[in-house]
Amino acid sequence: MIIFGLRASHIGSVQVEGSACTYCQNSGTQNISQFGRYFHIFWIPMFPAGKSTFSECVHCKRTIRKKEFSSELKNVYDVNKSKIKRPVWHWSGLILIGLLITSFYVLSKI
Image (cartoon, rainbow, N blue to C red; front, side):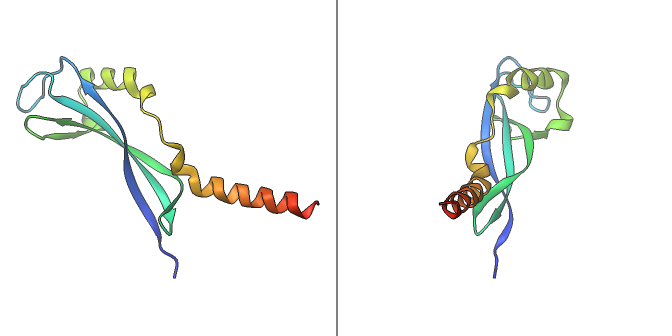
């Protein structure tokens, strides 16, 4: 029995300064968070399978998807998206397989 599927993990967050929530109108209460999905086999991450970006108001807890961002939120996200990087461990399964294949190849040449 092989256990496989998709999981998600929190990659990073950016606090939005000076932007008002469109729902509760409080200023400076929004955070932009990014989650990375990855394919796993036996809970070992093999490779990335996409990202999801959301904005959440800390005060009213309203969540907005990236496609619903206002122009101000889009600008803040575009400026800060280079700070949010996918972790290397999302590739750990493929890295392990690559190391095993390389070691078998090297050992077979000896």
